[in-house]
Length: 191
Ligand SMILES: [Zn+2]
Image (tube, rainbow, N blue to C red; front, side, top):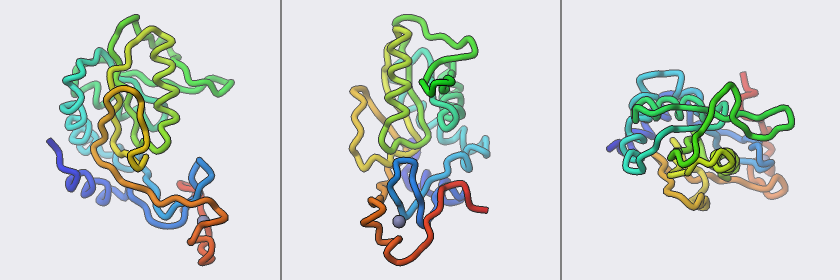
């Protein structure tokens, strides 16, 4: 069992946890941002984190793992490796609909774990759950590296994240960082 302290240590060491003034994809402003791709560039950390996640989720007896591209690709694969099951990813088609492509398939009644790097609103996870259900699979649980939902998400199945990091987010009109004249940046756009 990995401690939250150890998870936080890894996120800080790899620069995942960023402080500043960010425009989130939801349109809200925030004083912090997580760039999880930075931790997954290190296979040894990916292995350590996903092995811990897999240990927690193994009791759900999944037949496969699936995550949404791009953020969920590595976590789904690495967790699948730790569980010795298949690892798939979903992606958006030209109309923007989440779907399984590339010949990936889910058989009816297969037990599916949905993996995502960071869960904030849970929107992408719900889209993946819909894809699994369209294929006739059974979603047995959801796993994530970080829960940023402030405890608000409910997927109707067991949900486990390695760490919960609550987020301060603001409507632009009510953002204290804007009021202090600090320029807002889109995450990932900084040099
Ligand atoms: Zn702001």
